[in-house]
Image (cartoon, rainbow, N blue to C red; front, side, top):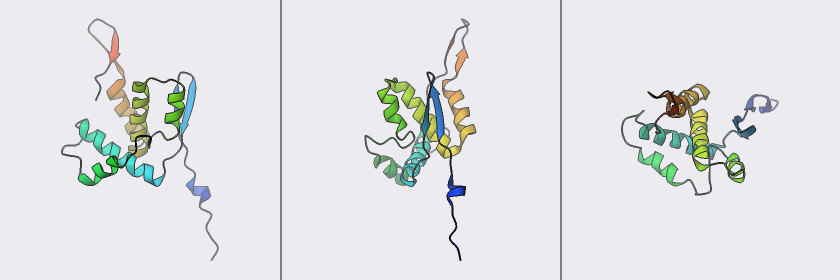
Length: 133
């Protein structure tokens, strides 16, 4: 029986994030990173009140295993953003988006980003970001 060349089916596009005229392409996560991303999504959904209850100990163990220099959702793009002098709040939002993009898909990540950060009209007619989660 001949071997199956899975390369044709395994191609997964990266996540393109555009900021200030630059496009950063986040590669698809590794198996280890995906475990960490799923754990981060669970924590975020609990913290945002989207899911009731506590973070399960097994999930917390995965989160505790993330090293200080690991950035599973953004991968090498984290270092590129840091080198570009991107403000930490922007990097954090991009990482949050990437977590949900990889864990739940583009539509979910887009909807959550709009709910968290899209400017809203105020009574005075100006715009300000929606409250942070």
